[in-house]
Length: 312
Ligand code: HXC
Image (tube, rainbow, N blue to C red; front, side, top):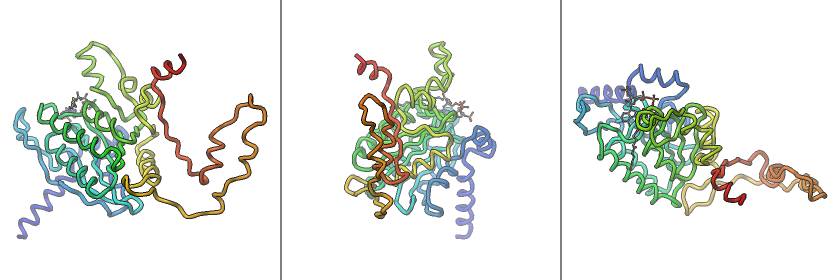
């Protein structure tokens, strides 16, 4: 028994090491946190319960039988944020670029199912090169299972996606159909495939930022709702956003205690100018109507094509 327990301890240590010290170092050099560090900062201290820590992929082609990492590139489980239950998956870019294998997908589906059964939000911390190329169509099938669950969960539990690295293919299609999407400026991208593949296939040179950076998706496509300066700000946004929304469609949103400071303020009487031709800042009105410092700006930029249509 002792031997088995020490083997378990050894395997857990191996799982914590992800794709190895060198790749973790590379991740930090790019200004990115690791999958586990992100969970650490997101959840209440000590609340994380991991599921599937020792899972490995089942593939054998292209030398994969010899290259296995415990956890298979995604950390999954549940914990609490300000005491409320949430389910989380956090993709580990240090393992095959966080790409999605059949088993990686099964881990994500498992926590999506549990989130639905327990009426709690799902938070995806995405950092993935998409379908694991070596697994081919089996990996694509994994995405079908995830997309199916995204649609079942829609309108039932909140689905929050933080894009925290270069995400390609399915790693973008799934977040794109969730309720809230945030991106980190200069280190996160959402595209069908990366600039190198674009160049090889179409001979077109395009920068990662232009192709799918936070600036592109917050000012042109309108895909992202929050563009964050860094990963810590992104994690903070996730927590703040969660404090405004209910855990499922049958619950009421969290409420705060009544305070006299929240009463309608006198300033409202003077914000709107008497002269109807004089502009005023609508945010001042919102600030007066909402609880003090409670207004959370949700950016949803209209795609340019829609703006043109409106102008006509
Ligand atoms: C397997 C992958 C991978 C993938 C990256 N890696 N993407 N391994 N499958 N999809 C591996 C790399 O081989 C490398 O391994 C490590 O992850 C880091 O990748 P780099 O390229 O060195 O990093 P970076 O320069 O930051 O570029 C990241 C990237 C780029 C932009 C994501 O790797 C890229 O363009 N990957 C391919 C993206 C893609 O076309 N994916 C398939 C999408 S199709 P080592 O061993 O060197 O560390 C799809 C279909 C969905 O998802 C359809 C659903 C029905």
